[in-house]
Length: 310
Image (tube, rainbow, N blue to C red; front, side, top):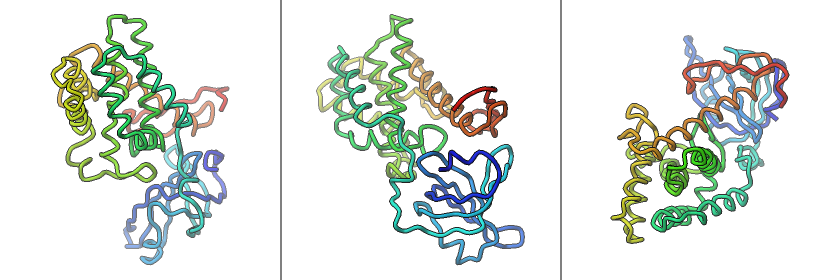
């Protein structure tokens, strides 16, 4: 398993090609920059000195057996592939990461939060959208990279945000609990249209042209009209929370948070994503060492404290 590769040395990896980019050296020789993935994690790799035919033989979504050695490059492990071949009999589903909770567990907990809602309009809109998109909501990733980029990541990330938001609401009791639940569960549901599929997602035309924030807002508009609750203020506030959940205009939100619940939603989204990335870095780093710089965390290196267990 990829997660068991902790140090430099000879390795043999059976994995899914998650990323495959073809380039050429200064001398014009083709090579591949790859990300190999199995159910335990991922590993960056280079395959040098190829012919055009060899370079064109590999693509994203292919399960391969790769032989080579692992080196430490820029404080991160990288595989230098010497031999690689396709394993056509393997199932892609065996090589993709998935959420640390079973789908039925997430469904039960989320349904419990929905059932606790007292605002009928928010309950109807939220539950209707989730019910209509249930299969994709529980299988799609929350992103293509950086955070919760695995099967079931969208639901797991959304559930984590509900938990965080409700803990905050226990301290700040003036917060609208139902708005927090609805906002957390719906904030990224547009990813099911923005992204192409659950296992090997890429951005769709709608995703590139519209983005998930505007897609969710359209979903809420259409559903609220179907439920005859479009004129209620809570629907306006919910849409504001969705539009502002990236926090700042330079981060992709057309407006900044203007109600406390929107501020909380933006904060717990950021907390959950950042702590996920930190944990990913820690898990790939030896105790007492720094991991590689994480671009999405302002290029910081994350330290794993001594004595930290798996």
